[in-house]
Image (tube, rainbow, N blue to C red; front, side):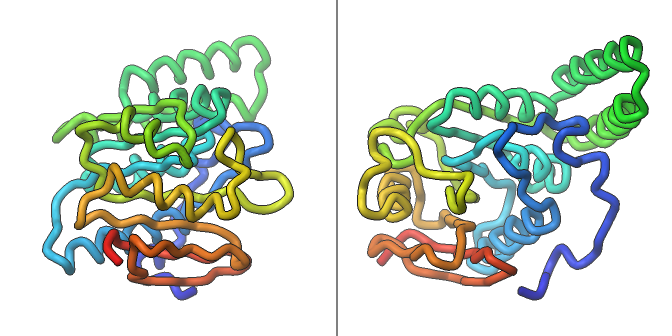
Length: 251
């Protein structure tokens, strides 16, 4: 897949998972550059259709919300808010920690935490993480000046239409960007996971929180069929073992 928007390769070390952002064990971090590319494609599609302005970004399978939090730093002015949910309570706990780093108060708490780790253990990795956190704080002060980032994380089964409707009632979701479970170390969970096609069920459940102008970007392995009769496909790309499919509500 040729990159159309994230063509440069900047130094992302300050944003690395497990440095300032919290990494969830067993939950691999999504590549930063690819996350940036997917979001920018969605924003470009919306702009071409006459839907400009900041968007509310939502991930119903957020894990630790690492890629969402990184996108907040990379594309803050384009985001009105970030919403994250997961069926796993532990994942939601990590998601809340990472999303809190999009506020100056939350990042200051992390800086204090890393400073204490430096004093206790004196490791170079902790010192490097502290430097990164201070660098991110400078960036965040500029990002949050026009408008503070609104963030929200909650526990819900992405396949449960009623749960999503209840939690997101009244919220206008502009872009859904989710990496669905695939591979040996990631499976669908929860009471609804035994359905024949969990991905189809997720798309079905999402319909209750989408607008006609919304977009749904799904990252999965190539074997999964990303389709639903309530959506039409806008774009499909492939990079390595991953496929990226962007859908719009409407058959």
